[in-house]
Image (cartoon, rainbow, N blue to C red; front, top):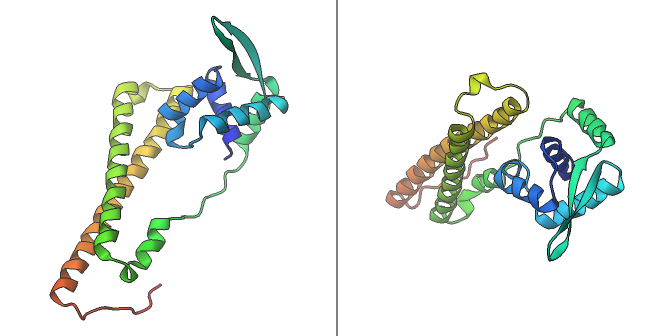
Length: 195
């Protein structure tokens, strides 16, 4: 997915200024696709140049006019084509996973500390997602259309965060066992190749 698609999805939900789109990224879309305000404004200009969005200038007292963007008919058509196109399966890429493969070359307490930070970040994000579920989707069985789709994306975030927390817990337990074992038997190390 490109940033263009994320912005167009945002505009398909409601028209907005670059600032308002940035705020929506901070509150919802950004949990799944992040962008800076600079990237958003630059992409809006490109989308406008390509005829995929239009804007209306709205006068403001004591400030420059603001541009309220909407998705153009061509933009809706392009977005629908994108939604209907196949999405490639992304291969698992994890800097942390590769780093763990080489943990025996580093300082195990440092690796454990970094893993604990990742776990805490995932747990904090899980708390945010569950708060969104509770506050915005109290009765998911009644949802349809756009609200159902937003809820289902949120559920994906919940599941991924839960999985990350569980995996970190499993890794931390294993590394802590290894650290305790190496403290009682400092000469025992294994560097046998593994798959």
